[in-house]
Length: 568
Image 1 (tube, rainbow, N blue to C red):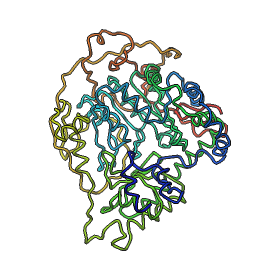
Image 2 (tube, helix red, strand yellow; image 1 turned 90 degrees about the horizontal axis):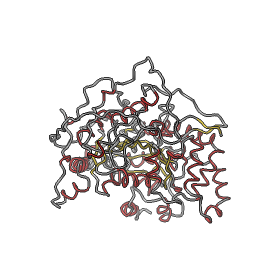
Image 3 (cartoon, rainbow, N blue to C red; image 1 turned 30 degrees about the vertical axis):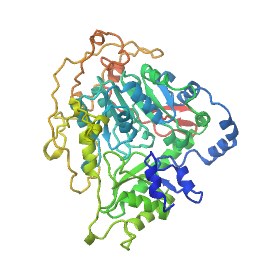
Image 4 (cartoon, helix red, strand yellow; image 1 turned 90 degrees about the vertical axis):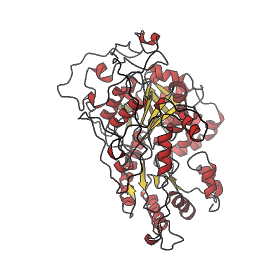
């Protein structure tokens, strides 16, 4: 494998070669996997034995239709089936979201999951990338992000919670407030693919709020949580109109027989699943502590089942990755090809302690070896010869924001003009985006601030000033079929956690005359406006925290949608 490892990484369309490819290049046994973010404790050995015993039937016969499998999952999670669409992995759902619901532009913080940047760029959409700052530990400030979206005039916003690769976490009330502030956009996507591994909040999911809004989709994973990436299954939750639009485009048999078998066996294994999540969280704390003890290695706080680490000065990520694989049979995710990151960063999946000890030993030998030829970090007197790729990342962010693939074409000399929205966001002193003046906004959690020279920022350019337009007046929408009319409830005496003015006021984009005259539900293809918020539906401030429910008992299933517990 040593001679072929570099070509293996260069020849794949993904960020890393598949485990099957790595196994073929070795003696038949794959490496210890710190690359693919998978639950190592679920399914249990007994569940794998059960699947193995049914293997012949599973692979021989057609699965049931997607509606049947979706109905079983919804029964388990206490979700209305009309609000759910299951896909062949989250990537299939992201692809359909892009094709059906992203008409012109999409905003996303970077670094993040690559399909949120690559997919819309591949279809010619404008991708507005909001750089997360290394100097602030990659924490996402939702108020600055909202201001960035308004300055760009972006029509779709994406938030990953926790974010991949850094594991940054946003509390539920802050995400709900952001969704309310973005109520006039075509779409807001909250990607909760790794939320099952978070323990900073008892009920962190916003699926309940998403079902009440006309322009919100929540994306959730099953493969990551259940430790079964190879099966390829995930789901989205939205109001019936949005979910139905995506569901109508999916093939009848887009879910395979393995997915069906797993979904139908889950109700018998709720306790084991809950225990697996608990163990991953404990392992995350232990792994973070062990990695933090390595000199020069920065470990960022994470609520995912992975840790984002910055290598010591002088360490080149591709060298560390290749040597860990060839010399120690350990596979890690080097993040140099992730927009907004560089080859100095690794994403390391949380694994059991015995594997972590092997990783730490390998890193010690690769990073701090005594021989000049064998060490990944050169001696102080010889310099580092390290290139972080920051300049290239900054160029990509500054030149393609507001342009997508068209910006890349112009940079290559194609002569294609940039749209007006291509101007870079306004920056303040020191190259930092100004925060809104309103007080009371929930601030992101404190994260370690690396002591390094800040990376160069894009050259400031003026932001086009939009003409103020009348604000939309909320209108009463008819309730979707199957939903009861909300009962009137008095507003609580306590003030909301944060004033709505903390976010920039929505500035609606011009609408066709026919759409402006429309008084009913927002028709397909028209920006959502006038919808009820969860606060209006419930008659509350919408920001009160849900009461803690604790872990389910041995006979209960932990609700993966954050909506309480269902009896097993």
